[in-house]
Amino acid sequence: MSEQSNPILDLNKTYFLGFLLAISAGIVWSFGAPTVRHMIDAEIYQWHYLFVRGVVVATILLVFLMAKEGPKFVNNFSKVGISGLIGGTGLACAFIGFIFGMTNTSAATTLFLIALQPLFAGLLAYLFLKEKLRSATLIAMIISIFGISLMVYNDWMIGALFGLFAGFICSLGFSVFAVSLRWRPETPKFTTIIIAGLICAIFSLMMVIFFSDHTTMPLKNILLSILHGSFVATGLILISYGSKYLPAAELMLLATMETVGGILWCWLPIFGVNEVPGTNTLIGGIVIIFAITFHAIGTRQKIIPPTL
Image 1 (tube, one colour):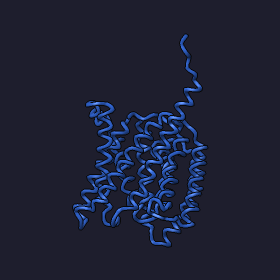
Image 2 (spheres, one colour):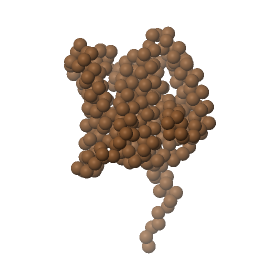
Image 3 (cartoon, one colour):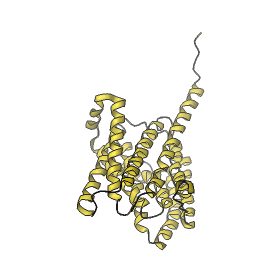
C-alpha cells in the first residue's frame, strides 16, 4: 500500500525551506557591510571597487545560469525587454548607492535605509503600475519618516548628508528593480541581475578612466570586492528561490536580517570594525524596522514567482 502525502506536512516543509533560503540570503548579504569597512582608502577607490564587484556578480550569475539551463540560457537575453533594462539599471544604481553610502556615512544609516525598500517599492508600484496603495504601506511610510528625520539630523550634525543621499539611492534602486519584475513577472530575473552587474562595471570603469587619478587599486581592495560580489550574487540566488515558497510579507521581514546582521558585524570587535551607531541613528533605525514590520504584517500576500 503506497503512502499518501500529507498536504499540511508538505506545506510546512516548503515554508521551512523558503524560510531558510530567505534568512540565509539576508545573513550572506549582511557580511557586505564589514567587508566594505576594511577597504584601504575607501574614499579613493569606490569606482574601482564597484567595477570589480560588478564583474564578479555578472560572472557568477552567468556561470549559475549556464549550469542551470545549459547553452539555451542565452535565450533569456532576448526576453529581457524594456522592463529588464529598467530593472537592471535600477539594481546597478543600488550597487553604486550602497558603496557610496557605506563610505560616506555610518553602516547603520545605509543599512536602515535599505530596509525601506518595500515601502519605496509600494509607492513606485502605486505611481507607475496603478497598484492600490495599501493603508498599511501609507501608515508605515508616515512612521518611517520620523525615523529618517532622526538619521538626517544625525548625519547633518556630522556632515555626512551625501552618504545619507547615497543610501536613499540604494534603496530606491532596489525598489525600481523589484517593481520592474512586478510590471513584467515573466522577465528573467537572473538575466536582469547580470545586466545590472555589467552596467555597474561599465559605468564604474568609465568613471575610473575619466575622473580618477588612480588606474589600479590595492590588492586587498580587489580581494574584498571579489568577496563582496560573491556575497551579493549568492544572496540574490538564495532569495530568488526563497520567493517561490514564502509570502511576500515574510520575505520582507526576513530580508531585514541584512540590516540587523550588518550593524551587528560592524559593531562586534571580532570583525575588526568596532563601529557603534549613534543614538539618533539607532533610534531612527528601530523606528524604521518597526514600520517595516507593521507593513509586512498589514500587506500579507503571496508573491508571484518570477521567471528565472
